[in-house]
Length: 330
Image (cartoon, rainbow, N blue to C red; front, side, top):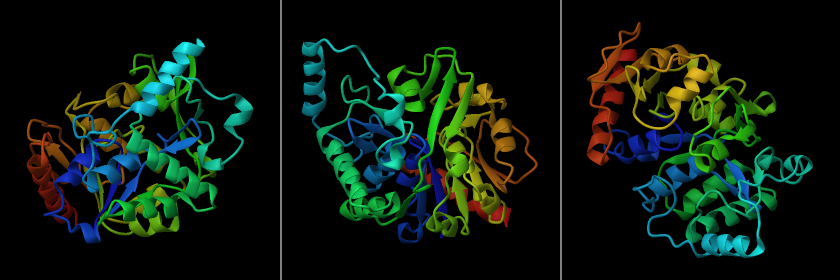
């Protein structure tokens, strides 16, 4: 009964080919919520939704974001109206008082829909509207996520990492910006001084997450800083991981990252941007899956395979390596 810790791309890719190795009915996925934003009043959960859409068979696999063949009429009309109204370019944060007003789960990450800086499809938007409405009815994010999972006929148990607000913010010479502004709005073309998981000291993992962490855990090849960092910042998560068997898949081949800003983020937060740096950050991991081209020597069991995942067959191969690494770690 494995539990996968998931960011936005690496772990969902792994899950796409894992069904023949790990029974989905016995699989739990804990999704990062540090990347969540409230955009135009609707809560968007990018990392949770990538798993939701991939496991639900509707994910746009070209971008690993949103729903395949979605339309974008609402997004395009918002942009047209903003042009006609002469509104300044975004991302456009709501003011400081608004950042901590309203629903708590959206704290420190509220953006206006004027100059929407994330492309939200029409069907995708319906998910966010429904999620937000159910939250406003008084349900927790965990309850809402399970409701959406039922709507998409998921077999895996999908959990957000917490029902409390945790916002990943990046400190830059230009000021503090939410990770989504840094990565999506600014395409990562900003110097990084530090990364903060705002709210993490007051947030807690849910009981469902802690129960899931008592099982074998697989940390997919997601960004160690912004995908796994918010989870690891929650009280009790590292401790739970030290008490169970954990396998991690490196997102690096030695010092070359497969994709995304993990190297810059690790460097900015004082970590070596490499497989060795990942191993140091994941001191709780009992074994690692590394690429066959990665000769990094670690003080824990290592299973090597081709870790590039371009299709489900690739993902199945990596999942099999994870299963082998779990055995080696026992």
